[in-house]
Image 1 (tube, helix red, strand yellow):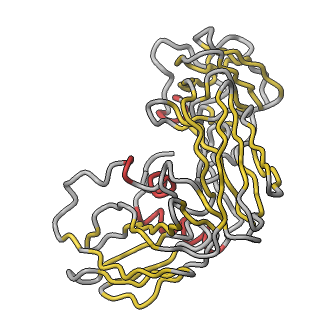
Image 2 (image 1 turned 135 degrees about the vertical axis):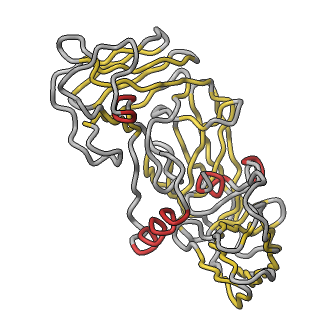
Length: 347
C-alpha cells in the first residue's frame, strides 16, 4: 500500500475507531494495474485492460495491511487474484482461464479458482506472471523470498518495543502475533508458521496469531517456521512499575504525530492494562483505543510543548512533548527506534 497523507490516515483511523472489528486491506496492484500500460517486452492480454491485483497473507497486527509480502524461504502463501478495477481487494475475482508462472525456479505455483498457491524453496526474487490461454500477459507482480532469521512475539493492539519480553494481565484475553523477520529486518509471511501455548489456554485466530488468557503464573508461547523455533517466556503482571515514552517523530504545529508509551514491570512490557490520557495542554490528544491502546494522536495548537498525563494501574507519567516549528526537512525517527506497530503505521 502506498504511503498515506495524514488526512487520509486520520479519516481511516476514525472509521476504525468507530468500527473496531473491521480490518481493511489494500491489495497490491500488478504492473499493468499500477501504470495502466503493458510492461516493456511483454505482449498483453485484452482481457485485463486494468490489470490485476494480488492479495497475499496479511499481518494480524497491522490495520489496513494488505498487498503481497515477501515469503519466508521454505514456506509459502496463498494469493488471491482479482481484476484491477481498484486496489482495495474488493474487485471481482479472476474468472477467465489463466496460467500462473514464475520467472525463477526457486518458486513453484499451483492455482485453483482465483487462488494461486506460491511456494518458495530458497531465497530468490522473480515475477509472478498471470497469462491467458493464448500466453498473453494479464498482469505480473514482483515477488521475493528471504530466509527467516528471527521470530518475534507481539501484541495485536499494543505498540511494543522489539526484543522486550511480554507480561500479560491475569484473566485478560490478549491476542498475540508472531512476526517472522529476515536478517535485514524485512517482515515475512508463511502459512506454515505455528504458534503453541504451554501453561495458558489459547485459541488460534489466524495464520500468525492466537488469543491467550493468562492465569496467575507465567507460561510459554512457542513459535516455529521452517527450521527456526523460538520459545517465548510470558510473565504475568497486574500493574506496571513505570511508563516509558517510546521514540517518535518530531511534533510540529499543523501536523499530527503518533506518540506511544510502554508500560513496564521489571524487564517485561505489560500488555492488557487500561490506559488513560488526561489533562492535555497545548494541543489535542486523541487516544488510539482499540488500535494501539498505548498510543495517542498528538496535534499541537501552540508553539508550547504539548502536555498530557498518561496512566495505567501502578504507574503514571506526565509528558511534555516539545513542538518543532521548523518545516519538515529532517528525517523522521529511524524505523529501528519506533515501536513495532508505530513503525508500520508511520509508513
